[in-house]
Figure 1 (cartoon, rainbow, N blue to C red):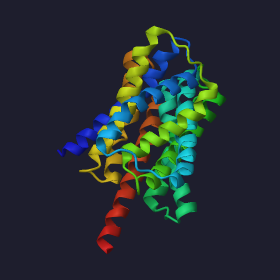
Figure 2 (cartoon, one colour):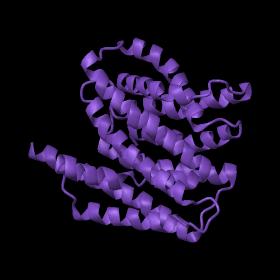
Figure 3 (cartoon, one colour):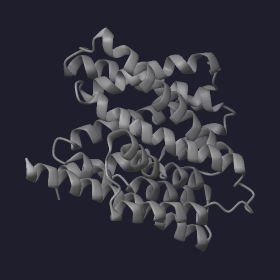
Figure 4 (cartoon, rainbow, N blue to C red):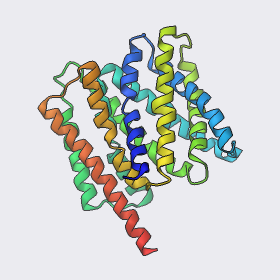
Length: 288
């Protein structure tokens, strides 16, 4: 097995721990904004020397407007919505609704970039939509209309995150792009943040910044040197599986048989979409 695939697996596994850290930090009565702010702030402290060692900062002023937009959608909205969904529902529901992102990315790709919706993609979209209908059981005490709405909106911002990332890494190094994105996202978080946190929460905040934020993205960026982005995205769908397993082991969160079928459909649909995109890229490369 290529080392790149192992790094993608490790990165996705770390991302799968995001909801777990959020749930633990809510035990210290921290707000979603405060948790996200310190996640970003501490990650920036780690990324600063890393970027300086890797070649410094080269992004010009003309690109700052783009990174302000990127930081607003991909950090301020995406991170906050995801963590708040975890707060008012469960890790399991939040991560599964997050993985509705392929629906939106496929539709945005069709309307914005004229990317065709193939039969496989249409099948995958149907699987994901059916999976959501099965997962969303409003009779459950932790599944409310607000949680569902915010979870689906998180999927939209996650899709935007992926689309904007394509524009970012065209001209900048991934670690430099991540630094600027986090920096602008932090600026949007400042007005809503309570900077006083219990000293007992600091190790958890640092772990949140180090493992799923700093180390996860570093592993993923290094993996892309050996593995194509489209193939890496397929392996990365292990993220919700890891999240569901950790949620069960740590918080004893369980899914009903109906929800398990829905989870399988959502994850399976995501894999099919990524596989279809991988095949399209291979065909384009063969034509050129």
